[in-house]
Image 1: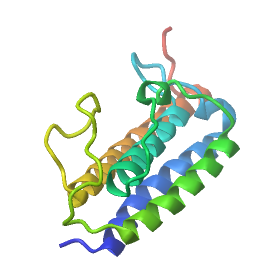
Image 2: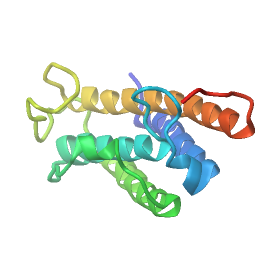
Image 3: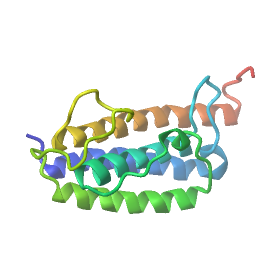
Image 4: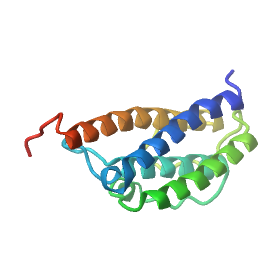
Length: 161
């Protein structure tokens, strides 16, 4: 069984990797969408992942109220330093909540049926795994977004608009 330390190691690598990408891109590029249909900006994707952590770990695992507008997360724009400050706070709560969590226990609250996520009932361990799933997939996606945005910026990739 995966220890909490190992879970944190991998989850935190993905989260801090996304934070690093957004910081490296700065305000202009972090808020830009790659030239692909339906693409999100790195800023929006990090905002979404913070919403995932707050809802799934803070809410369903730890029992805090869930107040989330998932659709708005994907349209988020703003100041990178403010987002990174928020991310640092979410990261700290995530770690604290993880240390207090018992993976074998039921969730303190079940996600509403309208909530996007796994289509089966989860216990705490499975909900934490879902959070890792989201962080890992979106970290990889953001690495590709960064590379594409930078290639376009450098003129190495010309995109017809």
